[in-house]
Image 1 (cartoon, rainbow, N blue to C red):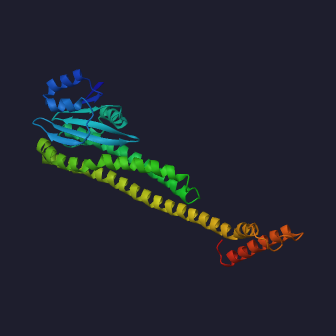
Image 2 (image 1 turned 90 degrees about the horizontal axis):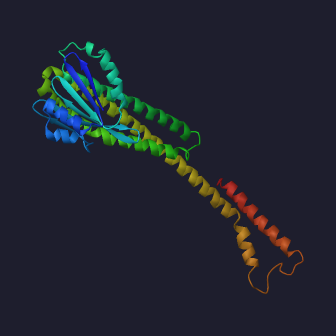
Length: 298
């Protein structure tokens, strides 16, 4: 699906799941390299930036819950093409802003397509910031669970949060290198005055990456604390079981002794032998119980 947005002399073309016909038409209109058209036709495995004579080609990947979303940019002097392979909400939100031209009116510079890219990428990073704040809220709920005796219940939540953070790190880590290369390509395409906006994009990325790292550090601290509490509980259970085995040891040993096939055995022929042995077991167990209490084993 192809959408076109105009602002003064700048054209923004947004393609969702582009067809081969649409790409061929764009290739002919804007003299796009066949390699670029081939990459636009399907998702790419890695992020990249390439500088051509008349445009810059960029591939960015962004985390989105359980999947990764790709956005490709073809940035010329007076046009910008974005392609993606599923609906991306930040792009739809920016389209509404773009149509009102409110954002672009703020710029005092002579407008070119580089500014459109700047505002789009900023909108995408702002969306990531909201997602990371949601992860932070999940961590706060986990924290409440950890310190309210729900260590076992939060293990699954910690696992899910860890997966989200790993996806964020894996997807966003290449952005640093891509943005560093973009500063060189962007200045060559749009001039040195545009370097301020390129540095601002890098600043947006660093802010997002800092949020990812902060969430990761919080997650690791919570997981370590939760694991420690689970370990303490497990040790407590093992200690109680050991004490119980110690206290009830006479219940096992004494019957085995009196059950041995020996002719001379105390109380064996006594009319109250059963009760005597039973009292003996109870007394021995009670004595061991008192020893455990005095030793403060429980």
